[in-house]
Amino acid sequence: MNEVTKKGIAELSTDTRILIQQIESRLVDKQVETLTYDELSKAIGRDIKQADHLLRTARRHAEKNNNVLIDVVIGVGLKLTDDYSGNLQRATEGIRRRSKRQLVRTIRALSADENVGTSELTEINTRVSVLGVINEFTRPKTIKKIREKVQANSSKEIPTAETLQLFG
Image (tube, rainbow, N blue to C red):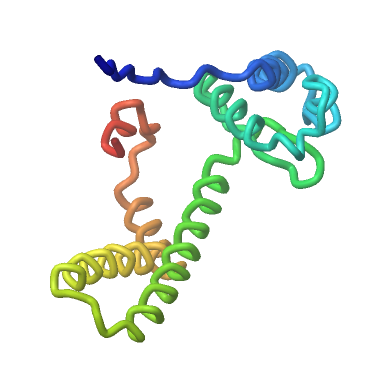
């Protein structure tokens, strides 16, 4: 009889745990302003550039566990930041670039494919519409208009955990 066993969520590696501990004890507890890649490499005994996936995981865990925002300083290391609007601005610009690039790539390939069925075209048009809305709402002019509306109707409420539930 073949029994199928479900695999559990993978445990964090030892190196990831060490990185989380380093980030929390040195950076979050504000012992240092910037936690360098060299320091992180020494902590795990190997070049962090070859284990960047571990650092991404450790950073996400530290941010979530401590309700902080940690920025990457390119070529240097990690630092704590309170540039919340800048972080969201970079994310918005990245989403805009990526959605536009994927849209152009897909439409270019689609225009050369004569074997696309009706149901596939429906799905494509749905996704094109979604990406079009993302592109429109992340345009600098649109963001400026939205900012003006928000300022006119703004209360000084900080988004809460309930707000995050809206995003799944």
